[in-house]
Image (tube, rainbow, N blue to C red):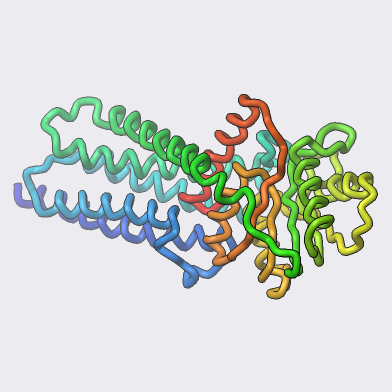
Length: 340
């Protein structure tokens, strides 16, 4: 009996160490995903705080199980979940470093490789939540269908985080729509790319972003204008289409730079941080839609960037706006947890 108890404690100690190391690993991967050093870490950022709380709960529950020998845990299930979570976490990170065969897929404005990476990270997080609920249910006498119940509860928790992100965006839209500008300051303006329609026509969202840039050029002192965004298969880049649209408006502005390589919002923020001069970043305006700008602000905080944001004036239908906010909620949740 003593031997079995000691063996169980050994497993719990190993799980405790594994959970702590995994917390360090997810932070390391998050900052690597953004081409940053782990030394740049800020635990007060929303996503980093979420990671910390989740693992603190895990560590506290494991510690309690170690102290209280009366708790009966299914250590095989817990060990399997921890191993699975490590596998998906490491594989998710590795998938960003290798050439996956999914880039011919293009859904929701994202290439298949990135969607696959996001899916792997999501499965990792699902494993961790399930691990926590298996631990919690170990405190109860009735442990029937413990894995199934824990899995369902984990899905509910992930849905709650998604709903929280949705309302987080709604509550902050007004703050990022229009930030004060003055006539004397010289600004650098960055227009973030958006979908290109057939025959290389700008989508209404992309056109509205360029229209807002034109408005700034005509009413304020704009030094440089950056048009960003790569292309979906078979199209000109978002930046090139935006430039064509700008020229069609007969705007006499010479200092326009196109950036044709970035494929996501996080890459565009990295472009701003790494390619723009310090002088340009001091008075930087990023143009996008209000629901998108909330995530841009969150990513900028991660990179220690202080930017001004201006929203385009496009009015969407209720369904279009709901769809875009829902998609942004998913993207924001994924960024908070995994920095991708």
